[in-house]
Amino acid sequence: GIQVEQSPPDLILQEGANSTLRCNFSDSVNNLQWFHQNPWGQLINLFYIPSGTKQNGRLSATTVATERYSLLYISSSQTTDSGVYFCAGRKTSYDKVIFGPGTSLSVIP
Amino acid sequence: DTGVSQNPRHKITKRGQNVTFRCDPISEHNRLYWYRQTLGQGPEFLTYFQNEAQLEKSRLLSDRFSAERPKGSFSTLEIQRTEQGDSAMYLCASSFSGITDEQFFGPGTRLTVL
Image 1 (cartoon, rainbow over the protein chains, first blue to last red):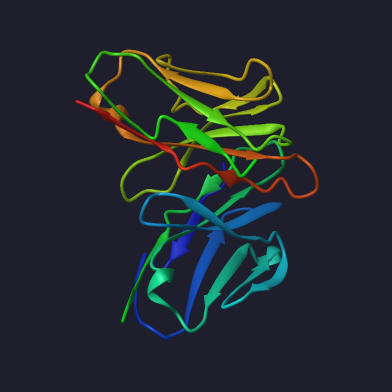
Image 2: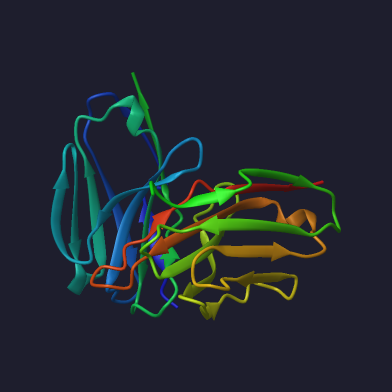
């Protein structure tokens, strides 16, 4: 199965700072999602982005499918952005979804 | 329908007991997934259904684990003879196998085995 790496594993930001989180896949994926896990454990959908660029408010994501990586940008970070960010993908629509190990983000006032 | 629901939200049991969790997916979704998540790790795939059919099972799903989706709607995950190593968050997700197959997660069931 595919392997998923995320970097950095941990990140501490001052409120208002910008950051970039990276997700690398060992093989091509046709289904890639970014999630934010809040302190209560709920996984919240951020982006479904197998390729291209999407933006939603202060967040944006870019996936370069041919190079098997995706980036999540957080601008003007807020304390409510704290939590763990996961990327996940699957090779085909019938394969199991594999999650990365996550990036733990702490935004301090 | 506001999303994926899971019950119970928390379960404490003694080693050796059986436990059953329930997941109700988003109503128009035909796919349902179970994951297990331990502290500091990403969710690990356990199994998934398309309608009633169980299409894939992880080798993590030992003989003590079984999942069903009898009518293609809700699903149950049963763990028999629980062990302390089964303590984890059990997450359910659903999707529609259309163009995107985007998964949406429930709040999870946190299992503690004493």
